[in-house]
Image 1 (tube, rainbow, N blue to C red):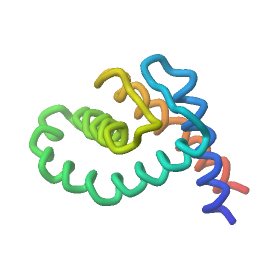
Image 2 (cartoon, rainbow, N blue to C red; image 1 turned 90 degrees about the vertical axis):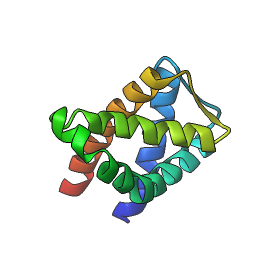
Image 3 (cartoon, helix red, strand yellow; image 1 turned 60 degrees about the vertical axis):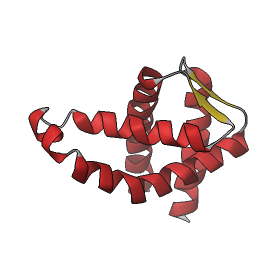
Length: 113
């Protein structure tokens, strides 16, 4: 039950962020559900590879390069999904940071109950 609740809340948050943040646009709530699924798959498959490749840069930037990797994951999702559009890298960076922060809060709240 917790997994389904987190999935639904993540989709609603993703939809709200895409409508609220400048430079991000999503066409509907079903596209938000697809976006959550695509982001989960990309985070499970592509993100570890990007972390390994970017490890030296991550060390040199004291971990800040991980923000760039998150933005790249969101940009790949933008490229894969027709219903989700971003204006550029800065929009992807802002979207990924805000989405990470908000979903972390949702995880804390749902894990307590």
